[in-house]
Image 1 (tube, rainbow, N blue to C red):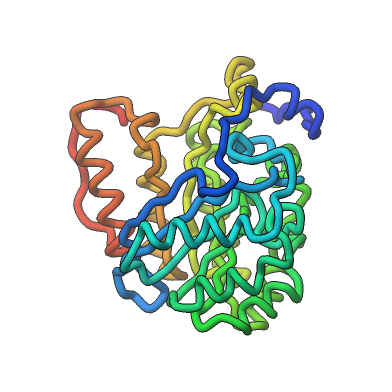
Image 2: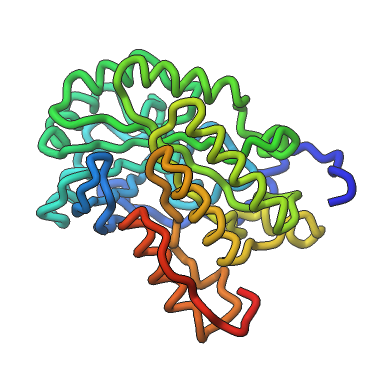
Length: 315
């Protein structure tokens, strides 16, 4: 873009552009999925992701749509462990588990501290326990939790982008220094981290989106992150849709996701995954989409770049 927009967004503006939340059952996770993922050790093993239903995250990021499956009130003690136990029973045989709670695992309003002991018991049989958390909520609780489980804790945090102007407009309540300090603290206590990186957040052109996603991967590995997940920025949360109407956002192309994933893999700084959930939304060609999706899935698993999809389209 020729000039960067002089726009800033706060909680009030973001909430005002939201739609209606989805109804959730507080006694069950709102979703769960099992899939094969390449682990830190290089093994390809069954991993289960549990999408917990709990109180909405206090950080209202511009691009976030996770609020759609949250409650308005804090849940009673014992409810979250019940969700976890229910989902684990549905996914027998998984070796790693992700506890994704549409916010921050160490947010007391989302997951009561009184539930930690029961959660530790439920997950202690897994090799890796992956939780999501805001860098500003990384503290001694992470260390204590890691020290009282049999498996390894991995903390996933939203880096989003290292573009200074874009990051400041995402209402993330975080600086790059906050992220770096959180990674350093966790690394000092032998806790691995993964970074969520946005591909083409608002205000960037297609090429700028690629460039800044690559720079964000560079930064993540430089500060000590072990795993990066590239997430195409999606509309659907209200705020991003409004920015699309005004020309400040458009969905990225699958070819851009391919380019950033390939770049990250070739750095050999750690694992790099492409988020291929709802990937068809970004497709511009029905002919090559199945092959492109399968190629991305294969790269995610193998962590090797091989082959290309040939098509006359401009996907």
